[in-house]
Image (tube, rainbow, N blue to C red):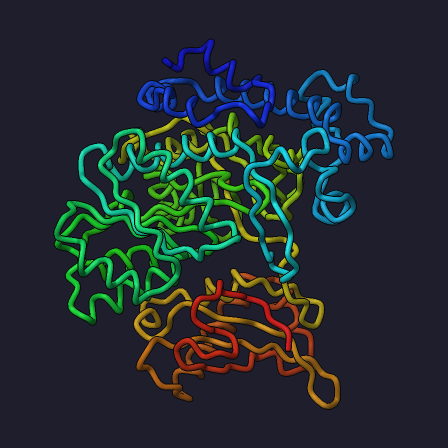
Length: 515
């Protein structure tokens, strides 16, 4: 099937028949023609399709999803009166509290039928409470298209036989199966890709690499960035020469800086290339929503190096995580400083607020900002003319410390120093506690690399770095330091590698903890 304008519109307006054979549809999907449209098409082509599809999902959900029908009725919204994208922007927002936790699972499914769902995944979320997420065929189709784009046009699996090692936790949780399923679908389209689903066991991954690497020209490691960092470093220490094969990495769930990216690439024995390491932006609710591209990485590097360019593009803000997305796959809006999503899937979600702090930036805005800075030609390929999304983290994932909102990303950015990379795994956990007089204290627990011992001097350096970082990044904390007569210095605790208290092996990192 050639993806001409007519077929693209069919995708955007397709009825969400979850029993349809989307696997066959994916195998017929012309990814080369689709990618060519991304490079040559105008941005508003995808914007218009995204708007049409968002409206289509809304009206279909208003008719066919019992929970959403009731949600609209309670708020006095008549779906037939919503005719334009301007009308759509006035629809009340949904979120986990007012929608997901309010209605039973099957009522949030198409036609109230949970039994029509093929797969159910589960997430613990930042709160630790389990939530179930049905997945439908169209969702798998979209994920497979995005994975094929990344694997073929960024990692070039059409040119090199590839060993793809998936290092996410497996079982019922999201990241493992959300990578394995679309990867299998891509592999079966004829690419020379061999998949090993290793789970998040460092020793198993290193065993796989040592035994199989000679048969492949390229290795792709997929997992959480701090886990893969541990794999790379331990592998190098045990004699693996990563530079003997093309090595590529794909991450999700955790943020990192460009300094960290350069560090992990150098640790692998390669020179910097924006195609070496790609991070994705996803969630349990929406699965894969956006991902880095060589262009978004290049622009993010410019933001780190050039404060004037950063100010022109995003104003007086810290460097965000920076992705591109296709509005046809996920319709994203900026409302205030939060990102709002619309997606048709096992559980359709309309104007859903993940409480992620971010901003949508049109391709043209980024292009114009670059031209003002004297950049007239992009220094990377491929260049896809689709919008960008900047992400600063979860708006509701924080510790309130003496009325200052302390976000994990502020701690992470504070620790972003190349002098610390060889000593720390990158994992940390913050918590708020109380002294006997009920004064508050902020505690930062940090995991040391294997073989590194707790050192009071290192703890002092880390504390100083965090204080400087918070005073630079967090105006509320700076105000407290200048006006509150309290000891606001974070208490530092350095833990041995994989200590069971906060850093038990095999668990996804938790950045905020409670005792």
